Image (cartoon, rainbow, N blue to C red):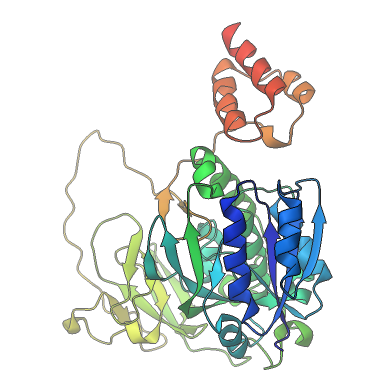
Length: 422
């Protein structure tokens, strides 16, 4: 038996979801590992208990719905194995998924590619490869399906029960920020797409949530080599294969970035330093590696780290990623075409990129700076009424958030009154 527990939070409000739970547990049953389930106040507790009793699982339940973060924490706390793998109750696992991930485990949290089925069918959806930059610039660049240890879960304080959307992106940022991460390039999780998903139900306020979580992530202390710091290296956290990083300094190169010389390592986390010479537009965009098909966040003339298979030594090969090969020497300068000067037109500023879809982390949309709105999801009616700075325009936006979120009738009534009587 593998020393891994698949942890599954269950919140079911429709009969069809009971069938999805059966399919989920059928896929877990053949993984040769434990399974822990927590029923988070579903509307069909007896039916769920009957389904769960037919499988060899640890099971806990509550009549109160406390949220998916709370449910996952309960599962992790009662798991009897040293490793956990989160899975949603409407998804399934590919055959041998846990065995493949555990065989690749070396102490670093590892996440697989996915496949999509249901309203959309994609046999192999490649999530982003791990990069320190992704942690702070994207609200989750992979799914919640990450194999990691219970000690790592405990060390970062578990999932935040005060977050009910993008909670997986926030949790993974803390997990990867401390212990790093790596991608397993096979579709081992089958991700069911349907209209009951939270990403569909919360779509109207996804930007507000994404921006709030992104700001929290950017304020974190990322203890990884890409930030000039060190990841956690405790032997118990690292796992059975020793240290997660080499103590030997990597060769470095002086390159021109932003008008100044910067000292950068030629290799980092198994990737090599390159200069992007593809599309000459000013905006940041994504370019897939010619050999690996991995998507990289790029901008013309920028430096970044890519898989060695995607780097070339000469531009004559027509590849967009020119490898920086010698320490202390700038890479070949690429002539930039003359840019058209437009008089009296404001210059567009680059906006942060976020993932619109927290589970697959593949749909990314630029967003504007956050509006200075009160955190209505954690406020009482009396606290909101005491705000002297609340304008009618703010009340209109808060009403939209409340109606799409907790939908508290007294809060909605007061906001409408505030808008109408100003």
